[in-house]
Length: 533
Image (cartoon, rainbow, N blue to C red; front, top):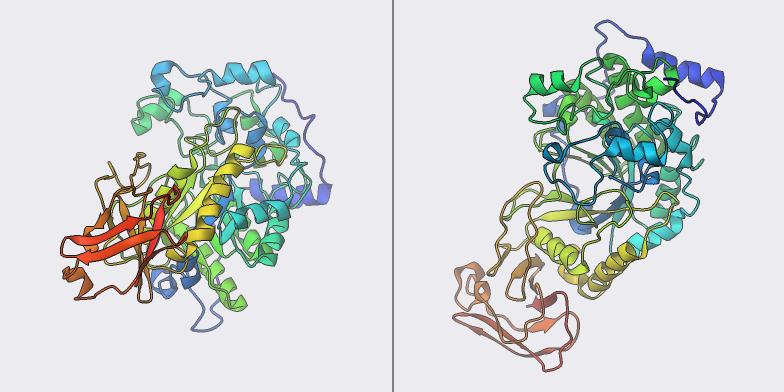
């Protein structure tokens, strides 16, 4: 069946020839580009050299909260999630789907065909011009994020689909050329810096390369021991399917669908995209998604050295993140996807979580979390030496739905009153106490419902902050702050106050704990933060 090219925007032949030609010509035993050694202080692409970098800058540890957004052409469908460019090529049985996220259409191929046409007639490349973003307002978005309490923010610069949310010379499939016709990252960077906020750019493009060209799903399942087709080719976003655009020999389509020789893809797409964003936008954080281990180590280290040397030239304190063991903790910060630690960590860490219950990108009927879930999890994260990167899910037209805004407003409202217990703090000797325990730790932790007896601690200078995850209606007893508790080293408290107002009726430091009683009529709060001196 013929592949429709009606939605492919014609670019100047010189640009197309230069960009695509360099990517599609294979090379033999080409090594990654090496960085010059301008001085002994320049970072080299080795762990020993890179480890000189402080993984978590103090500004990051002070900031606590960042906001980013999963937004791209995949939101046009308003179905599935950000993996739509992959799943639109498949149908699944209930057994294969194994009861995954509710609300998804498991008959994806059929659904796509009914709404847009068969992928041979309407591929993902045809969807990209429909990503219009006409309501996108960088200044308004940044103000929303700032009001929510975020100190850093930014875009999913490139997801698995290989679409660049910046004005790129590396790929014609970018927001300045096709779709919004705007430099999304550039507009955001300017608005963020005007508001004294840091810029984060996240990269998920390690999965963009087609690694299984010509292989069937059955072959991949057998080769990698997958139980069903849901997991087949998991590290390769686009499936190579004969007769579809994913297997096209058209140079421009090959570039979008990752149908490129691996050596050229690594140098001229994966690494070049990162360098272009660093050069043009100077992000304060470069964040990496999973499967970064699919990129040869030398390329990862080459980028790290390039980024750190660039920051050094600009006298900027920057940071990188990793998941699992994809980069050493000696020079990058560990990130947990939709999860967190169950204990206090000596090293700073990050959680990336989304405002909805399961999808990262906007879909019709997106189930948004209650605000108290987000606030309680955030407090728990901070008490354990973590930071939160919260994802929001804009629509394809560039609007952020009201229910998501309501959660951000609630988070910002709580932080406006209680921010002293969060910003600029460090973990106390223990993270907290209380009856509620997490079921698991790391990625994808299960939701737990906290109560007022669950206490989380932070500290700043000589002040201890105790945050009750609810409104204590009876007398609140904080065991860790008992008189003569060894944690306090014979410290005696002089004052206890609530950050939200004059609502503490009485307090007493007893041998069994610090007892706090609120005044009658004290308002309900998602969490009560007490300042203890």
